[in-house]
Image (cartoon, rainbow, N blue to C red; front, side, top):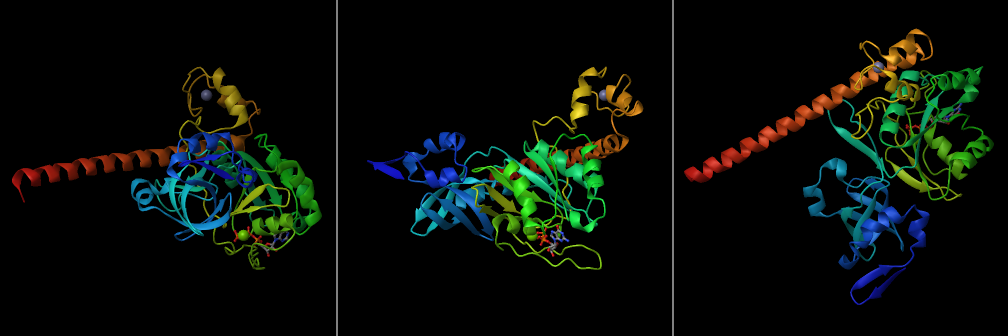
Length: 366
Ligand SMILES: Nc1nc2c(ncn2[C@@H]2O[C@H](COP(=O)(O)OP(=O)(O)OP(=O)(O)O)[C@@H](O)[C@H]2O)c(=O)[nH]1
Ligand SMILES: [Mg+2]
Ligand SMILES: [Zn+2]
């Protein structure tokens, strides 16, 4: 609870927030703001302008301050999982600032050339859920893996609907053979008892997880099964095509009985790579290991002589499908970054032009 000394609030302990993942990283930034009478809170869900927040004293609803909206790019607005500073008026609040993120899960926004969309923030691990019916797709899986790792988040693959195929283990083996060294869980959300095994291994108290995947793969069913009750609506998959039709419509962060938190996300048709800054191009454990042996330090492993990665594809140590998806993702990432750079250049030129017009108008007094 906050203790007031004069006009300064000192937060000795904040047990409720700590159970939501509050830690020294956020405290460090928060302490510089204690004189502003602001409270720390975590964003649990966003519906239009309304942000549902968890504060030390319970849930409140809050809106963004005008300054925050005007001075930030939309990708820096608070997202589910963010820690924010809020000015409280009884049961409502105004969000004044967003505390620096530990990480942010982003993707290329669907259908556009170069817009980055932040899906959620401060995530410990992301579950990539694929259904073993029609949804299973190794290229798409690798696109998720790349982007998640580049956002500095641990990926875990969940192959769901194991009850719908005759030999589910072959699917798990195919994923493991890609060599990404990430856990692969094979399950059926229809069997709640099965969820306990992987949940006790991967879901830790005070840690935040996110469920990603196409619509209808069973994300909400898995979450409800972990919760032991029906919180999220589950869709009816149409028998004709086994595809879901967007049952979950907003992102929500919920606390599980063991104290871990999961964000359920509406199904995504596209999950494009962006190549986050500070990340090392496209990633695969074997490529990372081989790269130092390439003749050129900046080898892109596409055509260069003396490339250890190309040699590994030739001698069969690096699977061909992994290399082909590497090339595909590298190009996708390059296109995103080139078009993002173009956009920035255009904005810069536009700003310069506007300034010139303003100056011209001032000089000519019209
Ligand atoms: N046979 C089978 N059906 C499943 C399994 N998991 C989920 N389903 C069914 O698949 C349908 C879609 O499940 P949801 O949990 O709503 O899927 P979702 O991923 O949350 O979908 P969106 O919210 O649209 O993104 C529901 O009818 C579930 O009952 C499973 O393991 N086996
Ligand atoms: Mg859902
Ligand atoms: Zn190379």
